[in-house]
Picture 1 (cartoon, rainbow, N blue to C red):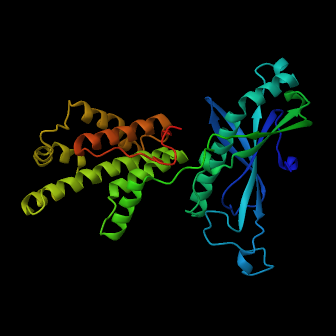
Picture 2 (cartoon, one colour):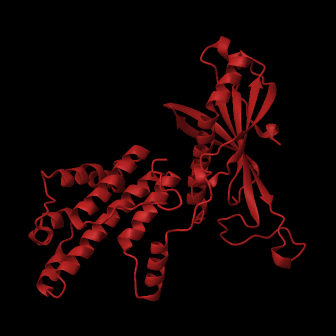
Picture 3 (tube, helix red, strand yellow):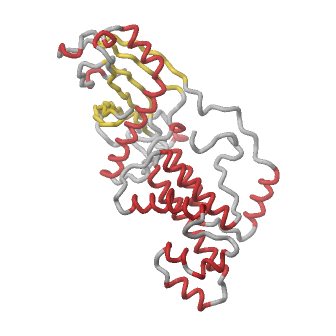
Length: 350
């Protein structure tokens, strides 16, 4: 079950996290070593993959044939990948490392950390796999993509780290992570249902900036913080351009002037923008502008120009909140509320 013959031991104990991906990776079954950073330490996490077929008749479609799958199947309808992630752990002293009770206590207290690190390691593998294969339908896992029921096994190495040998005693503990489980959500309010019917029956078109901002919250949920910042800033620029073209509609001279401005910051400093925004001020020295410039514009610039390679969740959340506040200030646009009816108490940081 735990494919210990594929594990490459290094004298450590191991926490083994087992779960399934919602899709299939077209990789040979085997051990994929992934270097990750946790608590400012680099670890080599071993991800052991196994391709599995689902027993589906699909209503009698191609009965008896097992080796089939749907093209670009992001939901694992016919096959999926199961995995065991081995995270190496060591005691802070040789005495603690050799003490089974102390190490067991560590595993019991830190299995949520291990679960998150397992997903992080698998997402790193997915990132490289997606790039090398072009399978663009594959996306990083978020906590909501990992079924609440995952297994944790503690593999205690009976030999000391410097012995050059490994002999494991395994202790398997099922863990139930209920952080994404909630009571069944009620239907959305009647007013929302009426609004949906009205928009469906008319010529309503979703604003591109609104659609991008919804994408942003999904990217944050997935842990794709770089794209979240870039997408949120793009949404902001689109909203500004849309407003200005609407404001100067029918005034071709002003529209032509707008279209000749090829820098967004130049646009914000242009009199056309200032006139359209009056009496609101969004310029150097004003707090709303300075926050946008610092937490969104400059961060986005550092990303797209290759000056910044990694972004934290805190940075991404700050950028998105700043964009939302800027849009609310300029256009009185209500801030986006993701999952507002199914989980109104949830924030995007959760």
